[in-house]
Image (cartoon, rainbow, N blue to C red; front, side, top):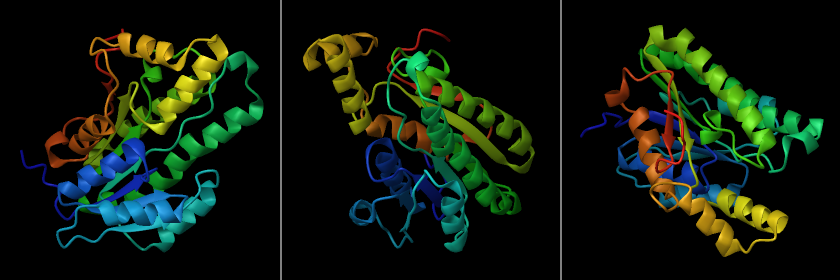
Length: 258
């Protein structure tokens, strides 16, 4: 299947590791010009060198998602126009929601919802001109089924999903789609952090925690970052032109709801 994203410009956030990196590579494989965004310049340079390049124009932007205004300014200063925006950044620290400090909610709200919002505002004018735009938010299956021990994350992810659905309703008339990909347990550094936290809090071994988490999904394994990225890349394509405002779990069947 030809996804028809050759020469499209894609802005991929959190793209130095995990799902973000796999998505950047997947988009580049399909012929898109990819701009990486993350805070570590050395890692950005390393990933830039890994991207498939067939006379494509790849680049990177160093930005910190704790500062939305600085992020917005750097995107605008790049003078690039984007057909595709992948909103993706690291999840909040785990813990019961009752014990969470207000500062944890504020930081997560800033990194996820505020940054998604300023980025979308920055790229949509060009998308409207082109009559083509794809905004894909990498969130979590907690949008459908809150996850134990991830109270702040559950709260903020839900806010992002509702923001996204509202944005989809507003932008659909311009040929712009806004969708969410909901990864389940995926082999990333984030998952390792969650596993270790669960082991420390429950007194179980890391292997016990891993086995429990794997058995929660009918597939009985963790996802590879590339498997989640495949869903993101498809939603970014011309082939997904009439898919708008939805949540797509990529979790091996773990989520109990339809």
